[in-house]
Length: 349
Length: 249
Image (tube, rainbow over the protein chains, first blue to last red):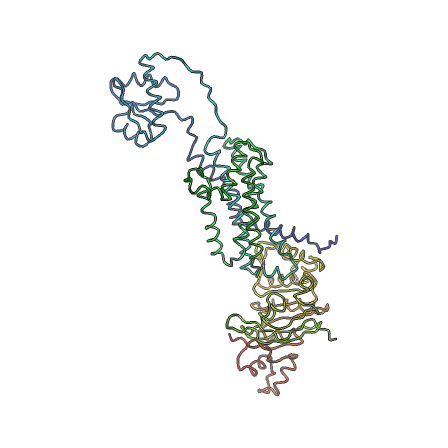
């Protein structure tokens, strides 16, 4: 069959295919896009296990009266008592291996660390148990209704952050690098010497990025759901919506970074300069709200903050897209303004 | 009206204090193979890039296929084939994928399979560019320039760095293009290349054309060869005119 372009497809499709082929033939790019977020979430899940179900660790100083205290504490749910001698007990307390150290005298004496919330809690719990064992009459026994909020673990909170970070890194690195590579190899110059439309070249970069987005967002989320038991409250379309707008924003930034630079050293420096503040300030690993109020307007204006906040709202709280309209608007601005500036200052030769 | 494929008049281009092209004029007829000959730094690349519409001259007038860059850039891009000196094609695309990409930019032109045959790369169709030899890469680069079935082909030092066999293969491709009625403008600092391919050459030195004509006429203009047993060459012409070797920097 003779096509109108001699066996080739529409230039926009050929340009997008060329970019995709280069991407999938680059093992490093695949590692950072797909493997890294999973490795990271596993590492974080291991390093910061959920603390909710951990029993309270209580050290009881050994001695003649230790046995009664041990019996009273062992009968209580959620308490793990053990006898220790004084030196070992104090060391364990200091290291966090026990939350409270009980000297079983009459009245008992508690050693605990008021700077640690779990240590203060352990002291209250132990005091309660020992008073009950000593014969205190309880005014009532409350009917407890324990509620387990799904998605409240650190790893559940972390995964949307890692997905947001992936959208940023792959978008900015991928686009800026491929443009600078084409420029240093004089391939850009060669292409603008042909009738290729410049707008189609730039559009193809963004389109190729979009094709990669779906697996890049889905893989860590599926891993979270099926391996780590992370719940997803929001709709798939809302997650995709946030991801697409986020990817466009970082696509625009990547394009701007790559628009004039001529060397790999310069583009690496620029990308790091732009991305590093966001890794730290945008709340991927810990909440951005921990930064002082004075810098909050800056933190909130960062595109990664907007992507991560919107993804968490959609994934963990089931928010619909309109609930994150503010974040999406900010991201649209981050996408459009750098794109327009990049088009103006782009160096083709 | 003379049927010029290309004409330029009084081209000037400087970079800072360095004058790269200094009032250069030439004309190329349709169907010719015209060579710009000169040592490195003579202004060949700057001149050809001005003619290709990739650089704006400081002064001078350029007419390509009877059209001007300012008013007919799109049409010219469709009708010209351009091969640049330093382009490295994408390493991780195959020969066929690279050709398809370049072919897609042109509205009219040859079939990708015909281009592969033309440059004798059918056997390397699925190989990545990174796996090609220097000569094969250069033939692929010329195939990309031929993708739009151009009327005029620009080549900037097409065989520099190639072994003799690869050079001959590339010359064969260019001769076939010319046999089909194409016009070629190439730069080279290789004498035998100019003698083998070009029916006319301009010798360029310090941004100016210092001699122009067919290789035979230029050699003949030297008069009797100094040594009876040696035929004159373009190398001799250049040395006589400038007192320097062509290969000198």
